[in-house]
Length: 422
Image 1 (cartoon, rainbow, N blue to C red):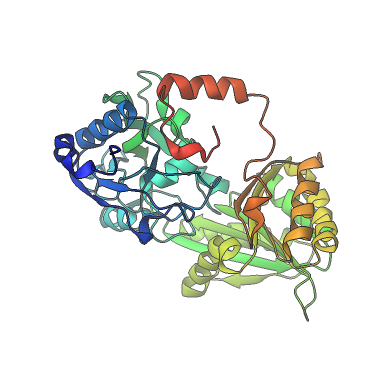
Image 2: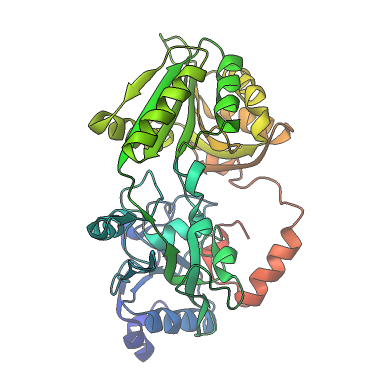
């Protein structure tokens, strides 16, 4: 009888907090685990990781599961280790503009708490249930990345549970602290493949007093790219500068839209908006209040609200016009609608492809052979594409280094069930 067939008999499970048999709601890309462990304390997470490592049990770390389908489909999953119960003891040092957050708290709940002191963690996610641990593990971000960066840019400290049962800490509680190795940067975007995040310390900002957005529509991509470049290189300071392009939607003309959001004091916001509108080559519309909030809420969710495959990719910011032409080319290749949602000044965004599996697979392969774009990762596969298109693509030049790093942190190779990226 295998360990997991008779796991209820293991006395060690009592040291891990909550635990139960896996059910359909715990499946990882359709693969159901035998056991779900739900610790409520960091020490319980570390003890559980030491246990699965000793017994070489393939383990997936999960927050609220909003991105559990990202990555390769595992061949099997023995254990899901949930961090959703790690929600105690948010430590808000409002005088220092920092906060220490347990991994299981959601971004929305955290910002509601911080708002009582007029502060916030300036991150956005398309997923309402996204936890702090999950945001860091995937380095997930939205339009606010233009001004404030990704989770890794706002981290100043982190606590990890390791596969040998240790709890390790890196960084500190104040912005200028530089003690220890920068493990926060290391685990950002690691997809839970080297350690479990149990808490994180972030620098915060005051909530802006005022916010306004301008949007403009364009007949062609070159004019849009020129205006985006002009805004990005100006002295203006938008908190978000986004482009949304949709071509090939049945019965509609191509849609090309630029949006710039300004958020600071009321006087400075109005002044910057007026100057930005004067600099555009086409007429613009002004959004304020609930209408503005609704527009950006839709924008951050847009790559995920409709069907199809969703791809994360990057490029040189100066190549935006070429990328917009590539969107038109991909629409002809895939035969379905193609939608690009991008951080215009950063050369990063999401591409959504509709259409039948075979032409969409060809379009993804074409993307991966073009020098215009890099880091082409398929986060959501439409239809049966996941069986034929690898989520991560060809291994990068740094693959050997990444694998050596993985072995040093996870010598038994139990974390993330070979879902990638390492």
